[in-house]
Length: 203
Length: 203
DNA sequence: ACCTCCGTTGACCGATCCGGTCAATGGCAT
DNA sequence: ATGCCATTGACCGGATCGGTCAACGGAGGT
Image (cartoon, rainbow over all chains, first blue to last red; front, top):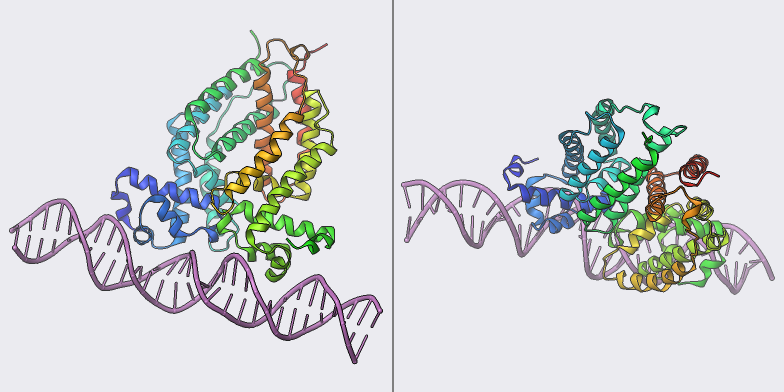
């Protein structure tokens, strides 16, 4: 890719990336027109091709960038060095919200790219995935000792359940197009209080 | 549309519908090629155009069919005449699973079509939506009296949470492409037991 | 005033693919 | 042998694809 892309004003870079995330997340790779990305970014197609020499290069850059961005925000918000489950979940959600604010379609793109079957890109995606995410999983070190929760609780099930709630909720919000950050944050605070009240052992 | 479509063997009809749901759920309307749908259905493009005279007609038919199908299965499984929340949720999930088995991409299609912005179809979609779903909401009559749950429970929050779990979980399963029905059903039985154990008042 | 530089673009390329059509094929019942 | 009809490959004109390029225009130096 053309290094001049990086000397663009940050907001213009972001506009281009977001446009890419949006179009690629809403269409299969081969049905995602570069012209549509350019238009969504507010630049000409020629200029888009000036920064990214071809479609595949843009796509794979977006993929790499999404992995980096996610890990960067998770780290910055301290998600990886918490041991308390609720703290980690809360920080993770806040981090994810910040990501969604800046790159609203990145999450959908990541999932879709992961399952993309087009032979032009799928191999590279899979390789890159294993490169990035194996490390990431190792970093998480949560304390899941039973005595902090109500007796007899199925802890893995609770964990999964909380994860699914977050996914399902955020997904619903994302579908709506432009999301109301304040409302999401309020919903999640309520949800967190709700969880603590339900799951945590009363002293 | 051509009435001959209905005299096809049921499985062939379903194959065509599923192909449509799949392609339209994975691409925006205007980036969804009819040729791709035909290929996914295992028929020629010409035959697809023989049954549906044009792309828009197929798209709107799929939309109508998805609404009808959902309501039909929900009704058949008795979701609308239950008053107990957990019963309704369990039946709803089983119904949804059956739907997902037969029309694996329909749910995604429904959501995507609802937010479709293409002027060629979006107006008709919105009109049809209001026609169908206003009625549907009226049918649900759940008993949410507090004394059946643990004291002090935030009932609307519990309801939302259960809904989000179902959405998030089913979404994750759908993303994987071909879904393992047995695993899903087992997961959901565990989840249901988990919920009852957590939320229901102990006698 | 002139020149250079360069971010940016409209116009353009050939190839492909689009939605949609149609004559022809081939299997089946008569 | 004939008629019927589901099904198709080949085809249509036009749109769109990924990608290129000459040229425009504003900023900065002289």
